[in-house]
Length: 356
Image (cartoon, rainbow, N blue to C red):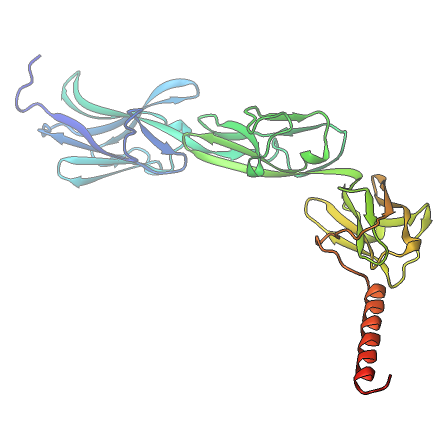
């Protein structure tokens, strides 16, 4: 049928949000207002502009009359205004999933003939982590199993994944786990840390950080268990301890050949707290005496158990470096050296004064 010059021309010229160029649809977030502006050229004088919605209600596609001219049939849901003499703007207030569908602007030409334009509205919802179905901070013991759950609501249905902070590898290997459940069958101390559950869809992103705490008995190690030094020089035995709860200084003990140490001015302990459930205990000899050589042991405990490590302090013919990479003489050697210097100086002075 040919179109005569005075036939109505109906166009939807503007929407808010704007039409998605890829989907060819109006995509709006849930609970946001949506606007369609319809322009009608050559509108018949005896015909009114109508807005209708073709939506799904209770599983059935239904045509919902929205307005005639500027009269809304549901003023709580829809409002109509006329920005210009030839335009009719529909506002859908507080858009919900039930508002999804086709929205049609039309004007009647004859009894069964309409000029119309329509746009499709899609309602999306940003992901939201589901509190009751997603794991929260958890504390477990080494050797136990753990299942972390990550669930989210949203429209379209969000995709979920598990990662670790700072890009650390997951216990299962890899940096991402793309299923809602992350299963760790045999927990180890290195599995402790922050795990992130994240959910993504076309509307946005949400996440939750879950702290996993692993309780385990102390593990005691050292870079050097056989330590050598000459008499009169500084040396340290270094005991590196990791455990959770982290052992406190009072939970760390040093013994020599099974007996408690007798601390005096030349031997003492330094305990240095570290990161990631670590503490370093250092037995310092200032300086090493002849009686100090022998077998030593460092023990640490917490509520999960006790562990220890043995050391040997051995005699060296020549001085060796300490932890600061220096060769340092102890106080008694310095005292002898200073006394010798004073005596030599005194002899020199007396000699010059003629007392010889």
